[in-house]
Image (cartoon, rainbow, N blue to C red; front, side):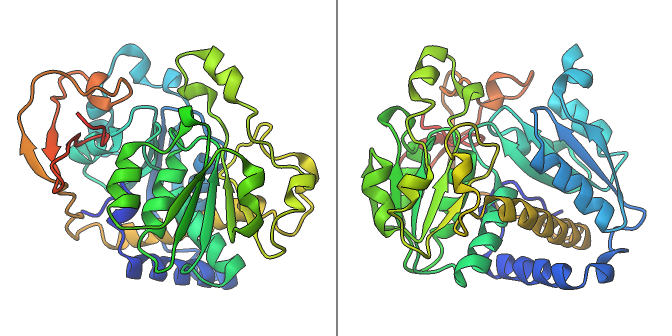
Length: 357
């Protein structure tokens, strides 16, 4: 059964097909009105969401199906102590496909193991967000006309920015990708992305501590919010929250054909005077998200009987103790054992959250 946990679950050819389907949906929405007739999508959102949850629900409705679920862990039996495994076992008996957001990294792997229907990762903590990446890829293709030979600047929270992690993994497969990593040291790109993707695949990259030094020769600027909900020390959040602010004055130094993306929501990192600039694509980006989620739901419903992606990341190793990542699902899900793998470069990482042991 096909699931989407990580953007790498999809081949480049499959992403191209999804983009083509999304474009056709945009041109001929009436042709897709019955694609999911009598099918039900469950939206299991253990963490708040506006765009992702509503775009999943409206995507299913636009395909002729229906949606049911919850938008807060406090409104489901998780608040009573029910495990994620039990929740998914139950819900998968009611519906045809599940979209799930969870604050714990690696939670979608637990969901897949206990679901009888396809599972889509709608964001797991600071780990991955593959459907946002699908929206990003469609936006870049539409705005720039290509996905290769692009210089992309990622600015803000690169440590916990799951959208950043997923988009870098996707762009690493296109020729000529170059990265500029703009963040304070405390929010730098985590090792599982920097070492496991960027350096491993030989992607050229530079590090900048200021937006002004980087903005002059980018094709794409990907702004991100410093996420208060990921910090255990709020004093650190307060110190870092407004480090990078894109305004019209700073944007004036950018190339005329550069585009500005943001997964939203924004707080202060993009000022309102940027919105009218034609390079600001973030609201078009949200609309593209619905098109790509429609294409993805259609694909997974059609391929539900096909085998799932092989996610073998290394050789299993037996190690004592817990995963060192306090946000890993193994540190929160009752009865879930740790699982560590030794990768090809000799690094030992958690199977669920990719944290180095």
